[in-house]
Structure formats: structure tokens, C-alpha cells
Amino acid sequence: MPVRKGAPALLSAGTLCAALLLTACASPAPSAPAPSAPAPASASTSGGSRPAPGPPAVAANDLASAPVPVPRIPGVGPDTQAHVPDGTTQAFVVTGATADSNTATATLYRLDPARGWIAAAGPWPARNALQGWTAEHTAGDLRSPIGVFRIGDAGGRLPDPGARLPYDEDEQFDISGTGFLGEPLEGSFDHVIAIDYNRVPGRTPLDKERPLGDEKGGGVWIHVDHGGPTQACVALERKALRELLRALDPAAEPVVVMGPASALAR
Image (cartoon, rainbow, N blue to C red; front, side, top):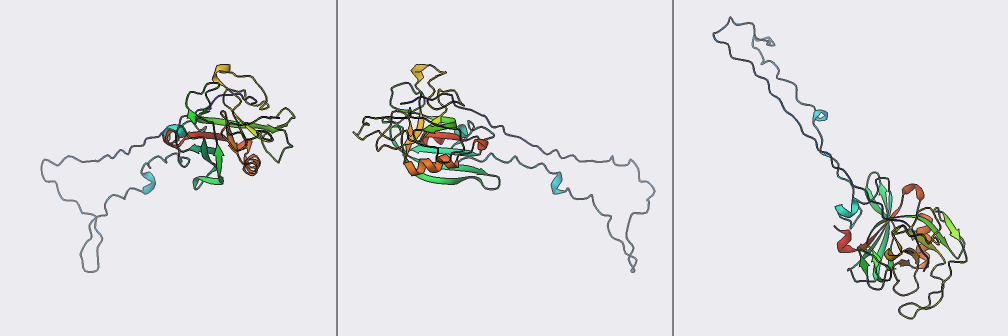
């Protein structure tokens, strides 16, 4: 399979604290009665008086408000969400049922200023590596890496279907042979999106430089489903992949959040 470049992008989210300080004032009691001064009163036509008004109520705006919680992507826990860059407003979430499952569900979410993270496309059926998932991916382990990774480069053997990501059309995105279930692999790389795991971002998905070393694997893509598990990639049906390619916006700093549900929920 072709190769990718890059490493996960992590970001921690800070939490703000606010405290309200209330102060009270008191004046010392006089040691002896003093000549009484006229008490402030409002005279009525009957000669009565009203108590002097008390101190003004504290305005609501003067109270410190509680911090607004950072919105979380559905199914994603605080630890995983902390790795999503602050500027990211698109997240492609690929969720496996268990650590050993090689089928998954994929949904594209977008961050709405008023409603938080909402589904923008999908859910779609997806496939991942034959043996499932791992947080410590190595070359040949037949598991897909767990984590949050940027996605910013695309390409394929077929012409650009309308992607906003940089798209490299190249005959080298060719593949033959059969997959783990004996299914033909031809056409799997007609369209691909490079996942920034152990690759250099900003280059064609065909680039083979691996900053973490060859032993950490590489060439992890989102590509066309060939009807069986992958070696490490994520695979979508052709129509869904083309829809995803047209939806991803570089200005939204998109990421893929991928792994088994139990890991993503942390």
C-alpha cells in the first residue's frame, strides 16, 4: 500500500475557574446614646413615615458566571477530545465496536457555534485493519492506529471528484491482487485521503517519508472499500468516500478520530 506521513496533533483544553467574593460592612456601636438625628423618612399625608431604602440589589451581571464547558464530539470522552486542535471544526469519527473488530461506523461532524458538534454526513459503514485497533501501531501488525490525526491531503488514480483538499491524480495509485477474504483489491486507491500518521503533512499521499521510522508503519489512508478488512487503513464505500472528499474543508482543520468505542470514550 502507498505511504503517509505525519503524527497525531494533540491539544489540551484549559478550564477556567471563577470565584465570587462577598464583603460585608459594619460600623461600631456608639458608647452612649447620641442626640437623635431626623431619620430619613417619606412623609405621608397621614403623618407616617416609611423605612429608608436598603442597599441596592447585586446586579446579575456583577456575579461571576461558571465556565462554559468545551463541547465534545458525540461518543468522544474528555481525554480524546483534548487531542482535537482548538481550530478544528470538522471531525471524521471512525468507531469500532471492540478493540479486535475490523468493521466500524464512520460519521463526519462539524462544530456549530450554537449547537456544538453535530452530524454533517453519514453515518457510513466502514472497515479497518484485520486484527482491529492498537494505540501502539507497528508495521505489519494488521491493526489500525488509535488516535486523533489531522487529514489534509488527498489523491487517487481517478480524477478529482471535487475535493477541497489538495488532490494528486496519479497512475501510481494503482493496486492489484486480492485481500484477506479473497476479494479483488483493484480500484481501492481510485480515491484516497492521507491520515497524518507517520507522514509529512502537505505532500502527496504517495510520499514515503516516515518521520517516526519505518518500524512504526505508515501509508495509513482512507480509501475505497474493497469488500474486506485492511492492513491498517480505513475503507469507505466509493459513494461515501467521494461525499467525504467534497465535504472536507482545509479551513476547518479537519481531523480523523479513530478507534474502538471504549478508547474514544475516555
